[in-house]
Amino acid sequence: MKKHLIILLVTFFVSFSGFSQNVSGVYKTDYREMTLQQNGTKVTGTYESGNGKIDAILNGNKLVGTWRNSGSNKSGNFEFIFNSDCSSFTGKYGYNSSSPTKKWNGTKIKSSNTKVVSIKEDAPILHNVAGVYKTDYKEMTLQQKGFKVTGTYESGNGKIDATLNGNKLIGTWSNSGSNKSGKFEFIFNSDFSSFIGKYGYNSSLPTKKWNGTKISSASSTIKLPTKQETLPINIYGSWAHRGARDQDDRLNIWQEGNRFVIIISWIDINTKIWKSYKGEGEFEGRQMNFKVFPSVINGKTIDQGYMYHYTISPDNNVITGYYTKNGIRNPDANWYYQRVIENL
Image (cartoon, rainbow, N blue to C red):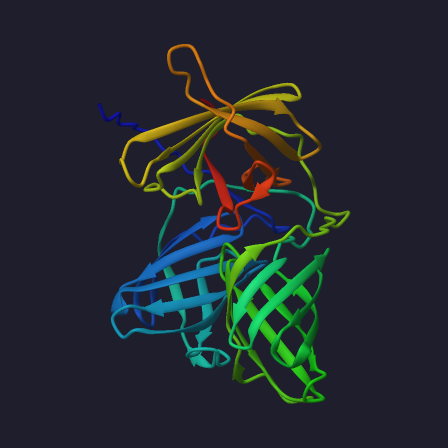
């Protein structure tokens, strides 16, 4: 018998700027109406012209990201700069990997009920871009230490050296095979699984396409800035993969002191039936490392060799993670959970 799970989702948004910003709402723009949804620094949206969509990161009053238009099958980069009360923005956009130069302005015509909670300390938000990417110039491996990112790419025994600012990575590249070098910039999407980029030679501005998609995650040495406020761990509640209302991947977490119990549920893609695993353990800093077991059948359960590894964000509103089976990591399983119900 198929079991149907009905979950009421309550969206809880968090902003990390020195002044609490909420850009959620409906805007009248140069390309008809646009609706924005904000979750922390992540902003997604749709606009009427050409069934368009955007995916971006908010840094201060600047929204930087990518747009795509299914009607025209075109895409590119954009940036919006909001005024002090976020009631309007001046913006620009470009095609493919070109720099945004074309006008795209907007004025808010309807606000959202989104609740935005600010953290008093004003500090940049640190994201993890470490991993292996398939790019226009073969595979690239990025290593990250704080906001410093270095890497290598296979084409011409290349190297990069860069700094991460929000979702933008800016730096220099060098190629020992051709003895050439120059500047580059990558703009990552909201979950940092891909980027749209460009590069240039010597001191010229980057204009040539250099895009990439992550094919394997990697551990990174990320030390949060001292001004980043880390809240006490509180992850009691219900979570969804990427926080989406239509996601079929859920976490329910109970917490008591330093211990937690977690139920992981998802829909089997073959049988279309919900499956559940249970795990429990103790927090290790902001890490959760625990074994999971399938639901009990006839009073018995089996250790199938699964070990889950989660990391809790400083604001307690994002959990990222992966799993191993018999000590071997699955490179395709990289999760990004967001809280949807604060108390069960």
